[in-house]
Image (tube, rainbow, N blue to C red; front, side, top):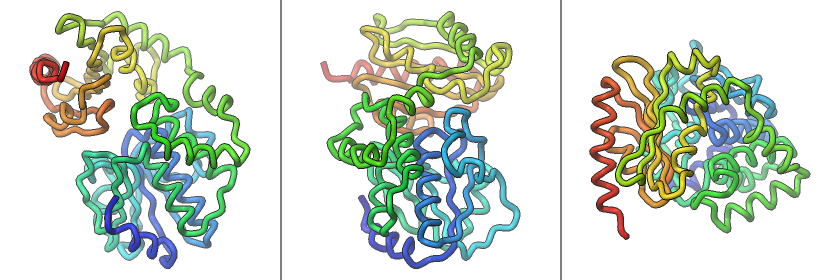
Length: 324
């Protein structure tokens, strides 16, 4: 946690206008945090505009305020306070970066250990399970009453970034926060069904293609899958449906490191990492990516075979150095 916290709380209480921004390819934590913070500030009488450089994935579109999110801006005012949520670096703001990094006050709220502290004020807590956990504590400190819809957005934020509370980033604080959210009348079963379980048939066509590409390395301690834009389009799947597929590699018995290569084009490959013990944020960082210790990713601007060889070379070395 950073020393800017008190100043941030002061600004949240006293400023009248805010831009809230989440990262490209938004996930549950970024969207849930964005919508909860927005509703909380509006409840205090603030003027708020919401932005994300990418569309909101289908499974999060039911959350209150999702329809208000904008995807571009041409009339921004640099005197408005910008709050960037769940973004480890400013590059993840995509087409919105130039506008919002020009604001006089930029509040960076995040929980990624790889955060680059790009704000004029930074509240970065790597011990928090999700950015939604930080937002929950902030909203309480500035006097926001927890409504059903705020609680719903925060529950989605925290549950998605903890893998339904299965990941090691789940703490006693996380459970205490979620207990308060559930007291607002949420149905965790219904929310989990909607967010985690319901998938369009195109997802399963895409998953079939992914599983058929399985490769194993390092005495079956590394499992990888490869997909491409062409395969995704042939399956009828959207880019949102790539989310979660990489977990099928890590979940194999005996596998330490799971990797998904997604080939955007001949000179661009997106790589997702999942692990059981290895700190994959370090592995992703070797390719200018980032994330969490057990879930991270990067985007590499080279051809697929080159990227695959480089990633496996680094992965083999990290696996070799892994204790035990």
